[in-house]
Length: 198
Length: 188
Image (cartoon, rainbow over all chains, first blue to last red):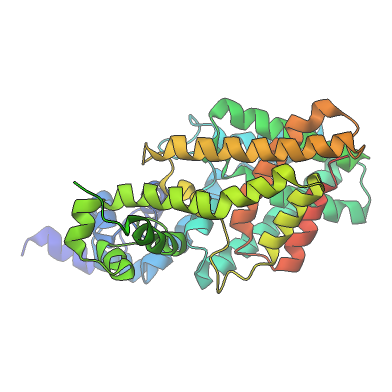
């Protein structure tokens, strides 16, 4: 047994938590959660499985931690509080998920929505995704409040509609090209915004 | 290699397996058991990818084409589309895998299976065609003012179905109906 192996066993948490999770995001996202075995994670991150289990409990624990990190790091919430018109603000926000140059190695769309689709039958994802949609609705409501002159009741409906539209948009890349996706986002947001302002 | 007479029947048995479980999670063992054939027969006759493509074909002609046909020819125009969307929202997917098999598979496999791309492009073309026919009927009946907006409405409704396919698993039917109606209310 090599010394480095023993040291690794003794100090299980000594790895860069975020860089491990970043790698897991790319892995789960491109190959699917079910398509990724723990060995693949070990190979890619060079962290042994005992350290991983010690830190996250199980593969699902890694998933949840990675979803939280993604939401924190890779969703451009600031775009929602821009001084642009509400239509342009939303357009920039949605488009940020479709910029292939933005995040190295990330597939297009939203990681959270992709996992929500794959793991729709699981309790973990039911809880996480529903809470995420609530947070999203809250952010949309804030954006509408800042950038439009809607009344409280219309804010609620508007935010709800945008949340649904979010779910719709995050699957678009599968069927549309980049160009079609942009056109699609633009057209639909125009419809929604017209309706909001009425 | 000659195909057996019950070829189509066997494919029909594979459809619900892919529909419920997706592609990756399904093993040769699951398929062979569900179809009542041996694994070696399955390997020789189809292979998993070809079986998936055949299953999607069968699913489209049995389940989807009749819906597009109804939408295209219904007197009710856009209301026919709304009815279909309500039905999707109301279906109980605990007992019945009601979300679209092709959309699920497309989301799961993305661009990995090349032969899948022409299949869902054709599917989308048929979907747009039937929606467009329904919307034009509503236009003729005076329910839509601006004819030039029809292509945008078609895209919106196509996208709505795509989104439904995801949120259906997370929101109760009553809430979905409200969402759906709020999108249909945008059409005027």
